[in-house]
Image 1 (cartoon, chains in turn cyan, green):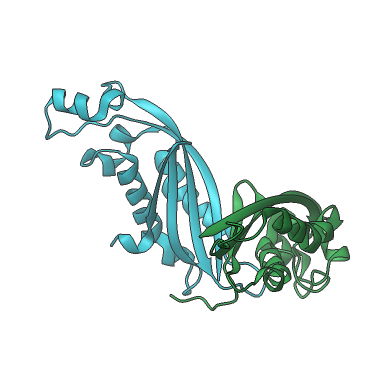
Image 2 (tube, rainbow over the protein chains, first blue to last red):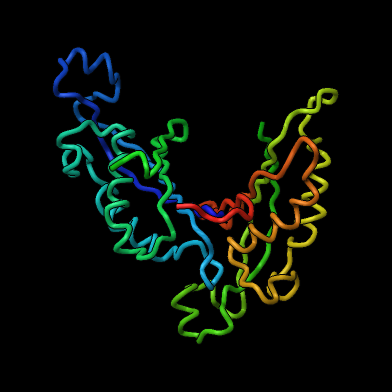
Length: 143
Length: 141
């Protein structure tokens, strides 16, 4: 079994604020992340796929993977304000948990249009908000 | 319990399928198909699973693991042009996937013991691209 992992980087800003909570509760819950003007991170994304080798000794065509991630993730989030510019975060807080789920959903939605056969399969993604805070989600955890 | 040891080596390679045209190779492998070759600083992480020995408290003495990794992999791959100098890459394309599998095959017989076995081989071609090989079991959906 082969698992191939590719790493990507993007930078984005966000503000953590749950509209159903009071301002005071938001400040208590999210601390500095609730700053009304927002703040940013250098996110590092790892996309892992698995499968057997093709006739050329590859588990995945990384050119196709790079194009998909570029279109579905980097174009949507890199140098963006997640709250204002990413529609998914108009209705949910852009925590890295929700960001991981949104990225996984975006890749999964377009996967079969790029990789037609059963392999490579999208296995999981992992996103580091800072080098100390890391979030991982498997494809089979989402619809 | 898992234990992991990391080693580095540098090597050059060409990723080119001899049965395809130059144009097809360029399309498939991009700049990695350049016939003159290019190189990488590879990082290898080898993970064993096993139980600590009740006397020594170790799954495998990391000194011994280091010697095995050096003898079986680093001494063979380091500062070599893989396609020309390291079989099976005279007939197998030295993609990072094929290299991880070759490393597994070199190491597995040397690391299998009564209370331990090779769990996985992780090979970084660059900090942004790596492969885990987890043995010869077939893929399941």
